[in-house]
Image (cartoon, rainbow, N blue to C red; front, side, top):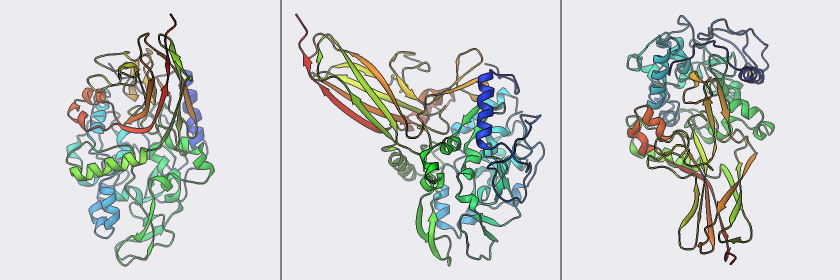
Amino acid sequence: MSARPAGLRRPLVVVALALVTLGALGGACAQPEDGPVDGSADGASDVDPPSDPVHDPLSRPVTPTLSPADFHSATRCGACHVQHYAEWSRSSHAYAVVDPVFRKLVAIRQADFEGAQDQFCMQCHTAIGTRGGEVVPNFRFEDLSPIVQEGITCEACHRVSGLARVYNAGHVLDPSGPIRGPIEDPAESGFHASEGSPLFRDSAFCGACHDVLEVDGLPLERPYAEWLASPAYADGRTCQDCHMPTYFGQAAPLAPERDLHSHAWVGVDVPLEPSFATPDVVAAIREEVAALLDGAAGLTVTGPAEVRAGGQLDLLVTVTNRVDGHSLPTGSTFLRQLWLEVVASDASGRIVYETGGLDANGDLRNYWSELDPFGDPDLVSFGSNFVNDRGEPELFSWRAALHTSTAIPPGYARTVTLFVPVPGDATGPITIAARVRFRSVPPFLLRKLDLGRFVPDVSVFDLASAALTIPVASAPR
């Protein structure tokens, strides 16, 4: 399938959505290049759209705006900040450039555009490399310098002096400035100048990378925009409050004891690259992800007091998003799978109805199933899908014309009715077992990316479960 050239006109509905999103995020402010700046881009004035949608003077420059040599490795930071380094080293930020799924997606985009858009995905995954001249057309990952291979390394954040916008790598980097962070009165250090910055306590800091628009304006990821409309925002709680929980300790030797922030950033991903972490660390990350997801959804199932053999059982199933800061799922929803599994069995253990089951490849039986496409007509899933300009499902954002979503906003619920046929010879009662299930990446995508070897390593997490038992009356004679 050929790539759609950048700037190709897309349907009005998408243009309108992109404009609404830009308005909600504040647009870009007049700080186009790296250097000292104060404050964030909240409430920034409107600007004209760029004449070159592929390049951006801040995050995707034509010529380098800084030198990777001006940034220090995380290992140097870790000599003093031992605990924070240990947390970061197993985080998704450290994994940002070595992730095999990310590398394969970059390679496909690279082939589609002959390297012309190589900076797009890399602008957040390694701002230092993208702005420092290492991410050039048709670059190779193995040629990147060690500091760039560190992905979102310590100084990719702690050298940020402000925000130019709250999406698409809107951070302004100041490599010659002080090390900045959330502590208002940092202890003096003989290794670097330090400065407290309220920006590090603001969700906008996270949104500057975690909200993403395609080069032609198609919204891809919107957790910050979701947070702006969430109960958490109304209550004054930030991204950092959940994803960087506090603990009491020393930021460095001889520093005073105070509240510190975890740099593990537990999310929904478990690393697949075996060289990234030991099996014990991967197992610990998997447990942390399971703990984070446990209870993220609510699930209720209701039905009639009784059903007749040979009749129909109408089930009302409600899935609630209990995460009050963003949608469920959020972020790269086009990669995530969140779905409802419902199994109905009679007293003999015979399954009389099932939806949300997996085929022999481990895939949901939807459009993308290689073994049973559309084999589950009742499948209920929550996430997002790309559609190309021919109205067909599409895997890759840069080939898409639309991005549709069924994710559940924070505090909201989705209710569906499932019609369960009850066989005439069913023996009661009918037992209903329901689960809300999640995984970070589907097996079919890993196989398409030639990463099928990782399929057994992808965990399915259960966010909620519910059960119901319904007596069966004899069929009328």
